[in-house]
Structure formats: C-alpha cells, structure tokens
Image (cartoon, rainbow over all chains, first blue to last red; front, side, top):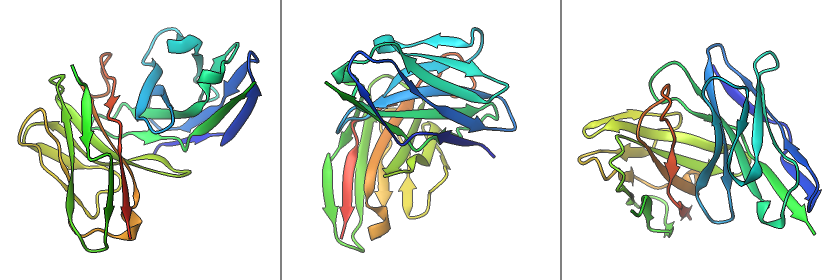
Length: 114
Length: 116
C-alpha cells in the first residue's frame, strides 16, 4: 500500500521569505511524484512532476522540488514567496502498478503575509 | 479549448434524493476520473475510466455510479444522497495513464455539494 504525509497542515511565512513544504511518502513500488496547487474556490493545477532523471525538478511560478529516494521525500521549495502564492498545496504519488491508483496528501495551506 | 468543465458549481440536496454531476472535456483525453475533497483528507478517487465504455472503482466508490458513453463526457451519479456525501467533487482528465511520460491530470473547477 502507498501513503503520503504532508508534514505541515499550515505554513505562515512573510512575503519574500523562502519556504519549504514537506512531503514524505511510503510505497513498496516505484512511484511518480507530483505537486499541485489549489487557489481558493478553484480546481487543482499542476506545479511540477517527477517521473525519472534529475532529482531536482523545476516547476511553474518559481517552485522547485527535490526527490530523495533514500528518505522517500519530495519537498517543495521556493526561494522568495509572493502574496499571490497563498493557496493550498497537495503532494501526490502514482505507483508504477498500472491501473489508475492515485494517492494525495492531506494538503498544506501556505499563507503569505505582507 | 475549454479544458475540463463541471456543472453545476453548487448543489444542495435532501437526504435520499438522486442527482448527476456533469463532467466534460474537449481535449480528446482517454482517461477521466472523479475525486472528492474533504477537509484534512486531500483528494480521494471515486471512479475512473480508461476510455469510452470502460470504468472502474477507485478508493471510495460506494454510493456513486458512473458511465462513459463518449470520450468527452463522464457523469457521476449519486443514487440516494446521504449527509456523508457532502463534499467538493472534482473531475479530472489525462491523455495517458501512469506510468507514462505524458501523464498529467487536468482538473475541473469542482462542484460543491451539500446534503441535508
């Protein structure tokens, strides 16, 4: 079975400060890894994904994430946040088992303060 | 290109009523899926489809039915609504399934359902 743990339910941060949103996963098979962002009253939008290759993945809006296989983590980072980054962020895994099994984390609410 | 559209945006039902949540996509995607989003639980997969005429259950299928008669549409039916089905429902579509380098899900704007 697979599981995803987002270690922080809420992260308050001041504008222009760096931020890291943490995601750990558990899986007995290899997985694809994703980060999505959800702005208020909207659907989810893909930020970035790791399928294979370089463990440092760059996404939209200046976000990046690093896949660490030994620690089974996929933390999301941004060096300088803006007010407009206030949103909920979801980490998700898709196991290499075929079919369409998807597992989402519970989400981390990022709140950027002026 | 409208992407993934969902109707209605909001709905209030009484316990025992039935209704259909509509989902359509104009990207010619084979794969479509329904999720529910509840506070503190992220998104959970209800049903999915890998093409017209083919559907399968996800993590929380009880109380919901789906069918896929066309590539474009993937409606979700609530047979007899219960308060436990109060949630936000998202439809998503993708060109391919995992594993696959082209796999990426596109989400609709959601339907907020309240069952009283």
